[in-house]
Amino acid sequence: MSDWPMWEVFVRARRGVSHVHVGSLHAADSEMALQSARDLYTRRREGVSLWVVRSADVVASDPDDVDELFEPANDKDYRYPTHYQLPAEVDHI
Amino acid sequence: MTDLLRHVLRHGDRALVLAQRLGQWITHSPELEQDMAFANISLDLIGQARYLYTYAGEQEGQGHDEDHFAYWRGPTEFYNPLIVEQPNGDFAQTIARQFLHDCYALAYWQAMTGSADATLAGLAERARSETAFHLRHARSWLVRLGTGTEESHARMQNGLDAMWCYTDELGPISDEADLRAVGLVRDGDLRAVWEAAVKTGLAEASLVRPDVEVAHSGGWQGDHSEHLDELLEELQSVARAHRGAKW
Image (cartoon, rainbow over all chains, first blue to last red):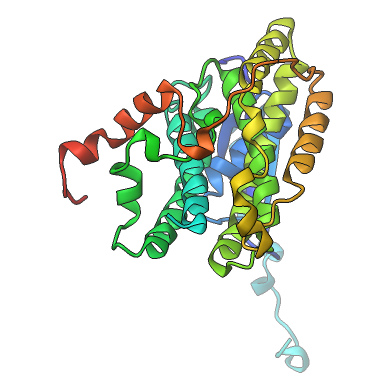
């Protein structure tokens, strides 16, 4: 069944946290993908919610674009809260 | 043997024998993910069998543990329905067997949550949700194959036809009237629930209800096909070759 498409699996470990990518699997359709995801990735009660997404539908950034995508963040201190001097009145915010 | 002990063994055997059959798929499934699916269902069933065999040991009162019931009884001492010992056949036949069995097992556990026996009612709560997932797996494959290609449809129908002659046993067992009368077993409408679930599944999968005249039964009474001999020989070979060995 090598023609079964690949699916990416996301598990939400508990209420209040985000779904996290845990791996991938092969399945013929979304229902099979969800059932297999349950068998493969939540056997020890790891989750309260599962997402499966066709791997082909994931749009990924190009590794060659790392510099222009992520490098500029390094010298923009104002994006971090520690950049700001708060007035004494709001020191305990 | 008391009626209750026999009832407990019937369902422990049903679970263990089917678990062994499903285990035979591992490394032979169409995809790694399906190996895992069958293995998980098999392990759930083994868990149910262990619980029931331990309880059988308490009921029997002769100091027998779960291993005794799994490894040291012969084929005529097993009381599972015939359908679970049938060979796997092709993937579709396994799915047909599983679907027909799971419709029964879900109805059984659902009913047994109201048993007057606290041990059985306790297991029923867990087994019910396990079985609901097993049925979802079997039913999704039933529909997928039944409504897939011409070949998958033909195979699914053939698998169903091959298993149908063993479905007479999937209902209340006639010699358990005394257990029913005192509320230990609550399965009065089991057959009707099974019929309804099967009918819905077959319709969804575009399959026709087989018209098979021959019906086999006797499994619940210990009267089995030769397939059980072969299955138990494999299942019990290690325990019998190394008597008393510990893991």
